[in-house]
Image 1: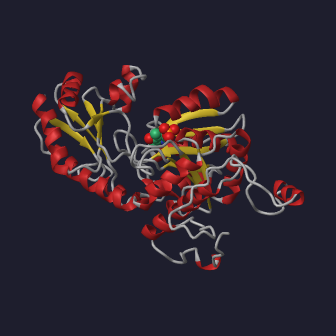
Image 2: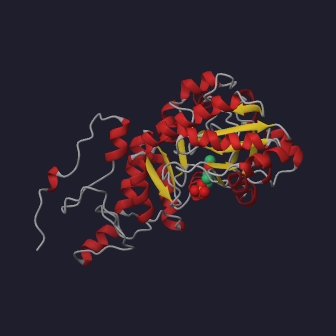
Image 3: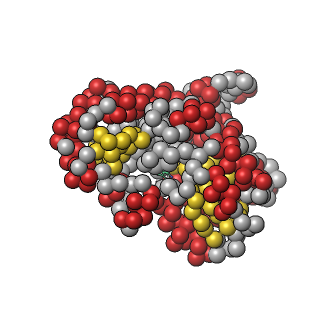
Length: 403
Ligand SMILES: *Cc1c(COP(=O)(O)O)cnc(C)c1O
């Protein structure tokens, strides 16, 4: 026999609590078992008391789970926690960051619609728009991220979405999210922000005026390089459409991954503060080194949009990029001389990573396209992790010594 618990006292009262408290507690609905950690519902389907109960749940007349492609309590807990942290009416979890973009475009765009994308977005995002959405009649144009007049000129009567990443990867360019939202709204378009690099701990795009925010949860939300996942958040009217696509097409999040992300979110703000502190210290140090020609980090007063960054972000993130002397050979020698930092293009991990964008993430671009995007051969990107900052600095010093 299971003991009967007073279920009414199991949930926490979260009225008016702060971000850090929401990150630890939002979204958990304890079962009568009284578990303190988030329960993991590793089940594909659910049972019904009676045939009539099954019919009512299938018809949506009574709430409840039917099948985990539609809803799963662990996935829902993750969605509710993200919605609380982003200040969204609703969040919808997806299997990866890319399927978050797939789902939102499939849900909100039709053939003949026009989408504007910032030039410096994640490589697979460009491929998804270029190779696939265009094939289904969605028109796509690209705009330099920071240039508000350029966005205004590029909007057409059929523009449905503006899609941006701010700060950009790897050069840490920003757009004024509030001003861009006004431009979008004046022309009847929606502003979507890929908030993967900042997480809601550092930037809350919906509060700045954006309509939809999305993440690759694979990065800082997990924070420890374990699981793939994504999430889209915004108003109910839009999320209803995303849910519809997801239930039908099926790129839903695994409950196991949702459970890992719930654990990741509990330490999100602590981790992001530590990532930012390490990144700031290394960026300031790199800027003083002879072998370094330029450092791109929004936390530096030398960054052209430092004031905007201070206004719209609560921290400047973990990604620092810099140009070294000696072109591609110099950059490769620098990278190969590190011994602690991992040579990998991934980011958002407690382990610091180093990569050469011109020959990895941006290697597909023609040399003149890379030049136009500001991705020089001498550019190195470091996604700063949570190791001791002195050890990281010593490792980067090995790179400098090899120049
Ligand atoms: C990694 C990443 C994505 C894609 O996410 P996946 O989880 O790898 O599918 C999208 N946008 C940005 C900014 C990313 O860094």
